[in-house]
Amino acid sequence: MELCGLTLKNPLVLASGVMGTSATLLRRVALGGAGAVTAKSCGPVARAGHPNPVMVDWGHGLLNAIGLTNPGAEEEVDLLAATREELAQMGVPLFASIFAGTEEEFAQVAGVIAGAKPALIEVNISCPNVRDDFGTPFAAIPETAAAVTQAVKRAVGEIPIAVKLAPNVPDIGRIAAAVVAAGADAITAVNTMPGMVIDPEAAQPVLSNKTGGISGPALKPIALRCVAEIAKTVDVPIIGTGGVLTGRDAIEMVMAGAIAVGVGSAFWYRGENAFELIAEEMKAFMMDNGYATLSEIKGKALR
Image (cartoon, rainbow, N blue to C red):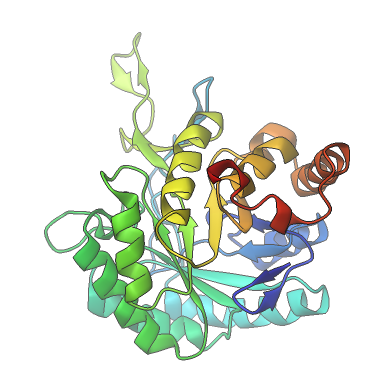
């Protein structure tokens, strides 16, 4: 399949922040059948992240607040360059992911990471830890989302960028239109949904950060709605991400309008061979239902 001029052996993309913290893990995921892999987001400076506990399985999904642990862009760029070369031999494109606290920092980090020549750069404007000078997530306002997109696009040259949007906004289609007008080549939809889990005996939130991002099964219906709203508004590739655990989930995401499918929490629920299992289940569904290509399925639920 084609995504922003890249050829992927299948539509499954490792979501950022999951199994993407080292070159070794990225290689393992590539060997496990991913069509492309996304490294964990990196920012302008090193961050240690939040103290444990940083993740909990609350029965209907996962809640995490890792805290954007990363070594900083200057340290990350050499790692990404070396990993990209290894993955290229396996036919698996490497996507980088970046975050920052200001528009200018986004451009700075993007320029540094572009030196690694990743196949695509994902612009994380939607993590709960990523906010502008007024404490509002960049992804919440069309104008700030577009400003970051434009700054990053100017900094990375010909490298395509995918802007990662937030699910907790009133009109995600309007924000998608703003970032596409500002130069986004693709959209990743969506990031996690803010939430909290409380231990009633302790009378305290479970996570050390108190709040975190919901992923897994509880996020899927929200992500599907967001992908559908974006697909009806703009005409760029969408990487549908959120709660995809099975091939059937992935098919639903494509039917909502995605061209590629992000996979993250599936590793928790199905193990390291999650990509292989999901790809086989997608093929089985397509054969059972008479579909020969993904293009026959893309956006089918919106017609």
